[in-house]
Image (cartoon, rainbow, N blue to C red; front, side, top):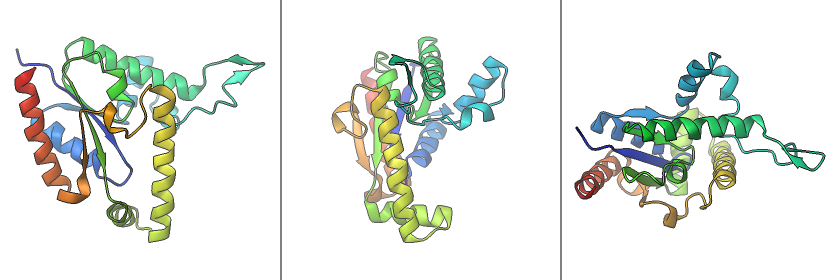
Length: 199
């Protein structure tokens, strides 16, 4: 039986983190969980994934999470917790997979098979990448990156004890702008193989 392998990818918007996650999943023959995770949850709950998508990795509005001074669960929290439970269940069954975002480096910390990675990038490279991907101007890309990273940070820090992007919370952090996505993925593959040898 092969060893379990869980790869958690946190990423800055525009860093190419998702594409790197796809390359790692392909290289190791693993399932990739990202927003597609909602489809799995929707099947289990016998509902449409579109019902969940608007709440995916959305920060909880703490103003609306309290009624008469009592904390209540918001839809954002419920969706987040469903995803966390899904990941824990898969990990506890010995499944190997790659997961993008979803506070996985915190949620799956108890599992020795988990390797946590954070992908960042130089601002100018991220702007150029987002500009091309979304066919927008430099100024629009700057605003988009700032907005998305703020959303990710708020979501992550609400659900995790560690801070989003803080190198102390990950096994390895890498700036994908230096080598590019493909070479960064190759470097991470070497790292993962060496880590596997020690598991």
